[in-house]
Image (cartoon, rainbow, N blue to C red; front, side, top):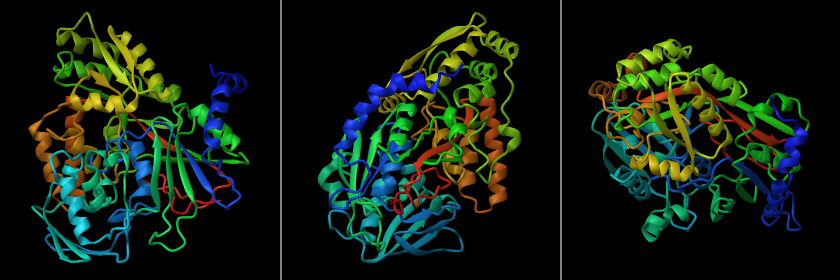
Length: 509
C-alpha cells in the first residue's frame, strides 16, 4: 500500500528545509544581482572517485560529462561523432587508428591539449592499476605523428575501440595536473570540459564553474553547476518542486505516472542499456557450486520485483544486454517464472537440502533496499536465509574490489557496444569481475568477438556467451531499468542520450 503524498511530505519536510538552507549558499538557480545562473542537479549517490582512470561508478560519469571532453562523443541517436578529435581514419585491416586533433583547446589549468596529452592519457589508462586497461587492451603503441595527430597501433582489430573512447577511456585529463596531484587527482579533476571543478563537500555537493575559455563558442550556457547528493528520491523530488534543484537523476518511480502532464516538471523516461542484479562471490564456499547459484536464479520472481520495487518502470531480464543493444537476444533475456520446486531440487543436489544463510551487501538507495527485501522474502521459500547489510556506495564498491563479500547488489549502467557490458564483467581477471568467475570457453568467445568487425558474426558469438552465462550463473540478472530524470521546465537545452548520461553543455535558463 502506497503512503499518501501528505504523509510523505510531513515526514520529509524537516530534511527538505535543511537541504534548502544548504542550497541557499550555492545559489537556487535563479539570477543573482550579478546575473549569474546556476543549474542544480540532484544525484542519488555521492560520486566516489572523480578520476576516469579508477572510476567504476555511474554517478562519477555524470560529473565527468561536464569536466572532461573525450576524443569522440555519442550524439543523441547513439552515433559516434567528433569531439576533441575532429576526424579519424581506420586502416583497412582495422589495426591502425589515426586521430586528427582539434587545435586551440586548453585544459582548465591553462596547459595545452595536443597529441602528447592524448598519448599521456591513453598510456595512463593502459597501466595495470587502471580500470580502463581492458577497454584499451588491444592498443599496442600510441605514436605522436605531429603536435595534433596521434596514431594508435593495435595488436589485432578491435571493434569496440571507438565506442570505448566516447566514455572514460577517451576522457582527457591534464597531464600536468595528474603529475602534480598523483593519487589526489581524483579530488581535484582537471579536464578540458565546459565546466571547471571548484570544490566538493563529501556527501553533500560538488561545485563546478563555467569554463570561460571553452573551445565551443558561447558555451556552456550556465555559469555554475552544483551536483547535490540526495539519496532519497522523494526528498529530491520535493526539492525539484520547490526550485531548490533544477534536475534529478533518479525520479521516484512510483510518481512517474502522476507527473506525466505536470505544468512545472518534465519526466524523461528512456530505456537504459544496462543491467541490474546480484554479484555472487564464486570463490565463497556457499557459491562455488553452480547448482546453488542456479537455485537462487530459479527461486526469484523478477516480474514481482519490477512491479513492486520499480512500480513497473523497467523490464524483467535475464541477460547483460537490453533492447537498446544491436546484439540483444529476446529469447535469452526472457525473465523465467519463479520455480520454487526446481530451486529446491538443485539445492538438494548440491548438498544444501536444508538451505543455508548468507549476507548480501547493498547501498543506501531505497530501491536497492526494497529489491533486497523482496529477494529476501522470495528466498525464504527455498529455505535460504539472506541477511541484508547496507553501506554507502563507495564502501560497497571497495568491498567488491577486495572480494570482501558473499553477495552484493552491484549493477551496470551499460555501454552501447555489447563488449562493454560483458568483457570486463565476465572475462577472467578483469577489473569488474567481482564474482571471480572464470570460464576459458567464455574468455575465448569474448576475445574473439571483440576482434571481429562483422556485426552479425559478433552477434552469434554473444549469443553463445549469454547461453553459457545462463548455465554458469556467476551473476543473477534481475532487470533492465530505465533512466528516469526529472527536469524543471524552466531549464532549456537538455537532450537525453542513449548512454543515460546528463550532458550539461547546452543547459540553461
